[in-house]
Length: 141
Image (cartoon, rainbow, N blue to C red; front, side, top):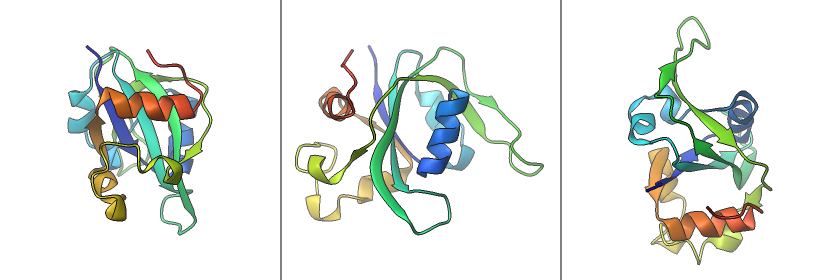
């Protein structure tokens, strides 16, 4: 049975993952990726356009299916070797989160809706996944 995940990263970093066919979350930590199984789905939420910059994005920016290969390390810089997981991303529209806030069940406090995203990667229920996927123009599974 598939599980559904939200990953949080800048749009710039998400697009690198989409282009390279991988997910990377929580500044390269392995544990969240180990919790995923082949066949699971991940949707990325991007609070900012670029890491370390102030320009807001506040959109769901990518959606894809986690592959069977277990997490692996990839050297991005001499002192940064993050964990990754292979993902096949599907064509999707980027969508603003604000119109969905009242319908997303994982956001219990609508006044402080950004709080759940501080975790960097977390599981959501199928209802929320299907809602976001539909708005992104992706048919459910």
